[in-house]
Length: 63
Image 1: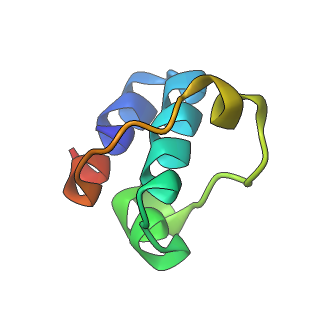
Image 2 (image 1 turned 90 degrees about the horizontal axis):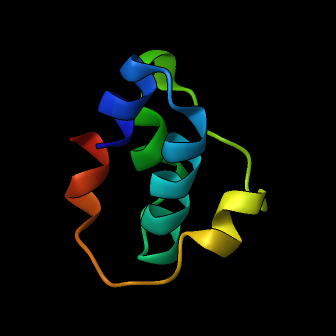
């Protein structure tokens, strides 16, 4: 899902999905692999507080 939102240009959505992935155990390598160019969003952004800590599947970040 993060890669789709990246293609669509919704950076706040990307940050929220990546924060959620981190909260659920995704590694920085997995996150970088899910985005074009291997980019990883910085930690500790405002989206991390608003994304919540719901339990999901790390595979959703590649969506």
